[in-house]
Length: 215
Image: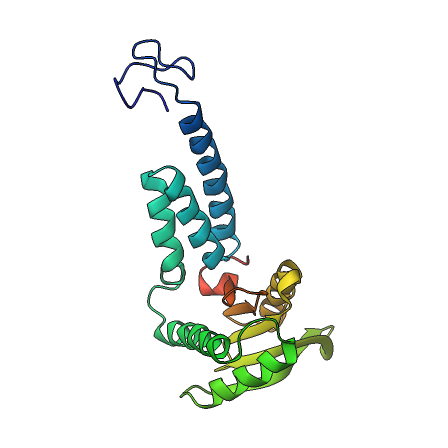
């Protein structure tokens, strides 16, 4: 905050020298908003667009800056910025998010991963998309091929992997998904968790050949 919002005098201290307005609380709010915006940008870079959206919204509640609104909008439609013309990947991603929301509304939070996995498989089966489950990741090496311990929970159209993980270990989930996307030479991946007491969260990773970068 460079100027007093009351009299527009240049600010040198927390108390305006012209009108005497104490702006310490406003300054604290501005600093808190700035920290939230840094966190939102980091989340956006890592493909955690849901987290980025909520962090930017918190920042905007503290300080109505244009940057917070822009980050909110970017987080809401970030997938389109990375793959602007691929309708199939858009469709798969929206299907995953809609299915996860439906499972959450029907079953609620706090259940084991296996329960959500079975419910999601049933949801996916009822939609017009082809997929495989528990797909092993194979690697070509030294003129041959071997099977790794990685398993793709759902593989859509041979192009996009979806991984369901535990809510308290989403960072490991994201790293493993990035590895699977790279090793299996896929175009993208979506990770999904059901946090305790919260709606499901999703994020993505993109391979270099899809035009983005691995998160």
